[in-house]
Structures are given as C-alpha cells and as structure tokens.
Length: 126
Image (cartoon, rainbow, N blue to C red; front, top):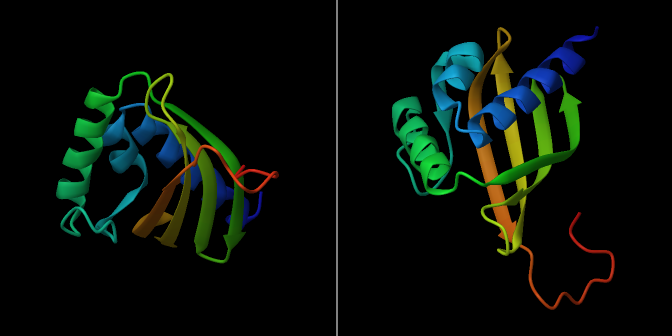
C-alpha cells in the first residue's frame, strides 16, 4: 500500500471516529504530539478542539457523517464529506485538510457550508 493511501485511510478513520464521538480514541491513534488546527471557533491546541468535538458529539448523538471523496498529495490529505447534525436538519458540506508528519496528523483545517434550500445549482453540493 502506498504512503498516500495509508495517510488517506488514517485521515478518513480519524474523521469518522471523531464524528462518532470517539474523539479521544481518534486523537490517541492519529494525532501527533504537536497537533494543531485552524478552526476559528477554538484555540489552536489539541485539548481545546478535542473538548469541542466531544461536546459536539454529545449535543448531536444522531449525527450522520459520510465521506464522499478523499485526495492525497504527499503528506497532505483533503476529505470532502456530508454531515447532518440531526434528522430533518440541512446537510453540511465539509472539507477537512490534514497535514501529516511521521504518519500522524500534525495540522488540520476544516471548512463547512450548510446546504441551502432551495438550491440554485441543480447538481447540488455532493
């Protein structure tokens, strides 16, 4: 298996685990000791984003998370996903960009956009 495939699999598993509320397990398995992120709503350290992810999972126990595509370029992986926080709520298109060092996630960016209704684009977001 190539390095990019391995990193892509790790990125996807990390995101699926965090979405399922298994945040601490995801960070233990995949986060580098120097992990940092660029989510504007949280301080950049791992402990703060972990707490936010745990709180989100507790607030949205029925959240659905579906990975639609993932691209790897060297030590960076981009993952495009669909998230739905609760039944009957709009889908959210999410893009995560993860940078790996020595096989662990060292840095992460995330961007989310709610699916509008009605939507002008007949192709949709997914």
